[in-house]
Length: 264
Image (cartoon, rainbow, N blue to C red; front, side, top):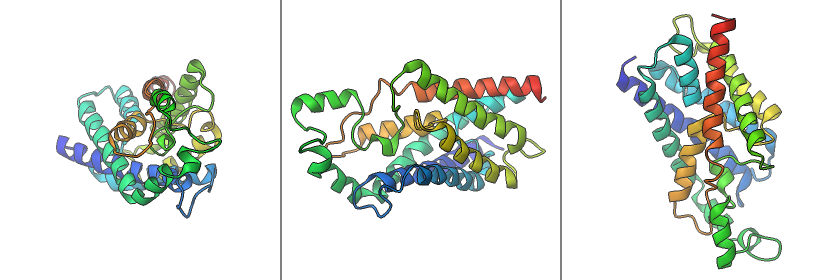
């Protein structure tokens, strides 16, 4: 695989991943969406199918890493870090493109949601006074969950551990069955199985933090959230943003090490 193939494949694949994954979050969250309140199972299935679709599309070009944690785990397994920066660059660019596409696809729903007094003003809703808006900028705004993850209970050690554990499971599954015999990427069944693994992680381990298990899946859309001209959008919760970046990278590295010790 050439550097240009890797970059193009990862950019396209990660954009599709975030478009479909962020899309299901938007569908379940936003007012005037036909899928509103469809629930956690819909989100878990949506992300699993997003991974599968993106992997099939980008696999022939880049091997379908779509995730810096996957790139790190495979680099540790193979001992080859030469293409790591190219993978990372395509992944973060693709994640940002995918987030913008979600905004475009749900533009009207974002506007309706963020200008509705039941959402951003009125009794029991998010206050829009200057003091509250200042507080919101430090935390998560009302649609940040469409773009990025956040914990139900803020506990740094637990939140970090949850992301490490979830990513470890994902990477160990990929390293043990997701690569084809030549080591060039996901095989035909590998992408399907990996999609089901992501569904399993979402259903079993996604409750505490929303299971980023992918640094760019969280960071790229969070940057886009901060830049988009969304009314009453609140903050991007940058104080939490390091956890879904560091946790998955650590989990991927541990999985790579365990693979070399136990399976190589």
